[in-house]
Image (cartoon, rainbow, N blue to C red; front, side, top):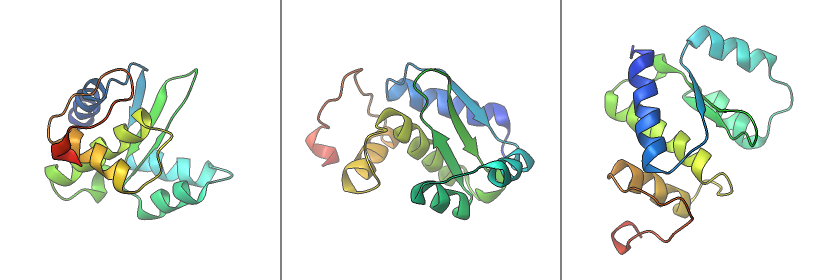
Length: 128
């Protein structure tokens, strides 16, 4: 299992790379994740899919800190965990994008070390 401090550092790293200036609360306790799933009321289809898979879920908040839940026991390697964290931070940065090719390219760019500006911009050709 990975430490909460490692996961917070990964979230912070990708948040800075993606220019997410909003505060992010990171939760890693699997029991908390299960309690949260039981307590959650209405779910969107995407939220339900994420919770059924059980890897992680993020919530974009306009006025309070964003929330990211990482279910650490589900991650078998550091690469897997890093990919999940980059994916969840991308949801916070590009909250308006659905899963798909454009979203995936942004995750790949973050994983490759690309640093985004504070405004929406086009990705370099190498990420298209």
